[in-house]
Length: 302
Image (tube, rainbow, N blue to C red):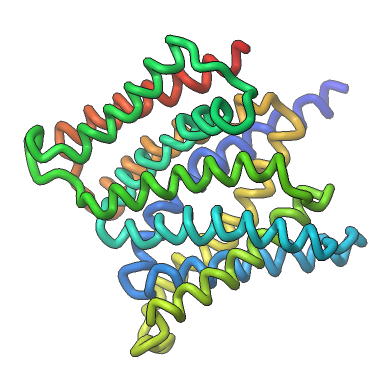
């Protein structure tokens, strides 16, 4: 019994380490990749390959294939999650440091709370929650402010807006997930969504002309390694760890990556990529994370 309990404990610790540090490091891997590969095309390769690997794995295990209605639902979610959220994230990382991008996406729990209030009715707008939402959005204002730019220029506004839309898109997909028919198997569902999202990203890349004048032979080994890291560590390994935690710990703990990833991403960006951090970057990050942690803890208590 003791040996089994210790084994489970170490598995949980390893899973937390993966979603904290591996997912936190993917922001820098994205930034490395988009410097040489067009952003939508890079995202398309990441999620199509990862989705195909997951899909083939669960199919080989005998999982039931999605129905036509489930494929339609997976495609709809794939659009909001992978095209609108990740597509905009990859595009924004050509203009915004990786650590800042991670902090901006930490707003997802705030927008999810708003979605639950407006569309699902599963949460009420309390004074505490409203204050936390205002604090979190105020942090974004600090990051984007041109009047408060101490120690350097504010972050690129187009990139910041893209990241806000990306966070909103994720919150919309969280609502849709509860409304649309999906496969019972979470792994099959995610594999189908990644496949559909990867194909939609490829179409978007073609529509925006990203294939024009792009040659795979011109991509450096560093960029290919970044893509491989995103596929294997970020998508396949990270997703497996997250699913394991959802089944073996409280959902609030599993979702704690939302406010651990940003400081990890900032630290990795500074140490490995020489990204600079201004005084008001730090203030904005602290304000955003304060709001996110308050929202998460409030939901945990309820």
